[in-house]
Length: 50
Image 1 (cartoon, rainbow, N blue to C red):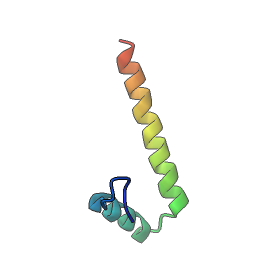
Image 2 (image 1 turned 60 degrees about the vertical axis):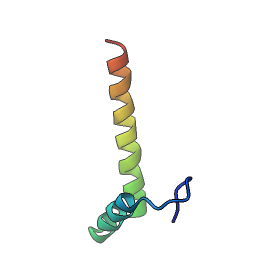
Image 3 (image 1 turned 90 degrees about the horizontal axis):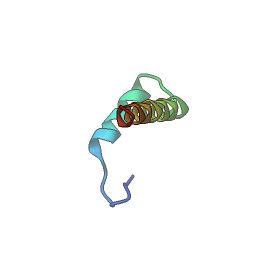
């Protein structure tokens, strides 16, 4: 498993492995990440319009 730069991000690997150990599916992990990105972007939009 490699990133675009050719390096493994050990923290991400640990996070995914922990989620899998807790019984989360790949789809649930992907949904969580997508939701987090969406919420993060909403905050940025709000901050830019102050």
